[in-house]
Length: 219
Image (tube, rainbow, N blue to C red):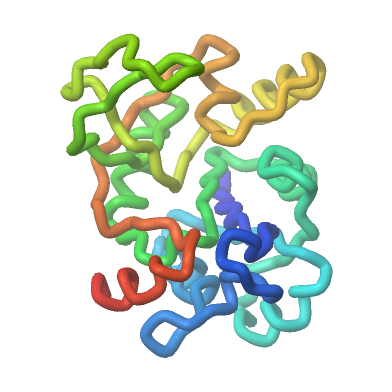
């Protein structure tokens, strides 16, 4: 069976304080979305790439990306709804690979080892070990506890799942009116374990204006 990557690009530039999609900003001479898609086009195990986007970005995105493996789907109001819109266009697959379009510096080797883990365990995500000590605070910002740092990961994408498992998890969440901001949460909500794969600290998410020069320096 084929493997399908879903690259999420339907967000807006609110935190960037810009009107156009932040994925159309350039890093080292290429747009963010071009770099994100190209990383997955290099993977021979990926047969199809679906990019979710806003309706007003269709012309701009399609003019930048013309590979026959890439199709575009209008995203939804939330991350979960955007993924659902893409899922509904897939007839069948072994794995579904979900990635933030705003993470243009993902490394090929990190994608490949997360694919292998997902095949072995049904669900896997790339992430990095937390460097800082984390504090859990109450509503008034008083420290309640300090979790053991060695058990903490900062989750990134891609997050990769057995296709049928993900569809069941999505259906369960929707039936119970749950809307998650992280795809692993869908799987966790079903009681299925997710394997964490150690990735790279350079796999940053472009969120604010300060991230653009940071990404260029990492290139």
